[in-house]
Length: 277
Length: 228
Image: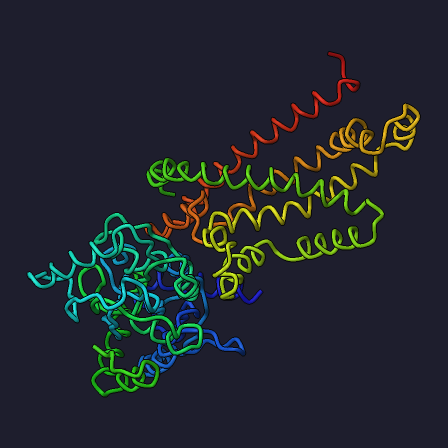
């Protein structure tokens, strides 16, 4: 019943937006995954919490709209936006050219490098590479690191969450690997810990969070912190292409919240580091 | 509706058919053997055997297959004892974890189908077997089980079709069968409707083949119902 109402509301918003062109946004429905802590997750009492939920509250106040946040599984998160189930995505979604073909993105609000994680004692532990790898204008050192990764990971089983920049990275930069695609980060973590996969690729924070739990104590990083190129331009708000007025509202709100330190504060609250950009 | 996308995704989805068919055939085969054993245990009249069998059926029929797959794949892997045991060689692989879950699940349902079939064998036939001097084992082999299986065939055909559909849950443990491939195409194209329509058609085709097969079997096993 609730879902029907949300759908109807979403459809109504679509119709109105379509008719009026520039509509006055008073209510914005935001979709999130609710399974990607500390970005967004569902707590024991079923509420959506996380850095993005705090940021959403700040942005909505600045945009002068009331916001409602609903959860949606990752692999349907873009179609549900297009179908009008909600108006914006805040789900740790990196801005990539592939996704830009389907939807619009606000400017980035957080940026988190990607990391490779392995089990302690794995022969992949402690790969000697440069610390940061930016996949734009690849120089000699960076190419050497890429080659080294390729060689070390050849023939291994590597996991990533399905349809993420991390899965794209594995497909494009690593050859001869057996890719396992997971529905959620939690499942990826579980299989890494169980030793079913040799390595996993995901956001730095997603692993750090797991490493702090008892189950994740045996997980360590290896290789460089990676960003740029296939890893996208940070994490932004996903919006329908036609809602350019909403895009402007979000961009302005993110600019303000970044300039006055709000984004930094939320980032330190949830991630322990400043990931504002 | 993007017809081009549907056309392009068809060959990739068909590529997942082999894995779907493997999952279904292997688990149906193993489940069939398991089901006969469980049905016989239930009807054995030996208290420990029959209560073990009914507890098994109760658990595997009473919980969702999705939960069973998750617990067998992710749950068992939580225990270090399991990861260090020989069983890990099998449980480590998502394919075998799926086979185990599907087998245990279909075994529970099918054993009930067979139990019904065995109990429906007319008592007169069993008496006739006895009168001919058949031992209990021989009467099971020659009279009771063949009749019971024939009786159970329509219900079992139903179970086969359910298994084809249930195999799609293997996609939740990283297996790229038809549904797994569909999900990964959708993840790239954001077009769930087109891709799932094509996947649905492939499942329909598989189930159509099963329906034909079961019909033919029924026809062959019931010659007394129609003229040759």
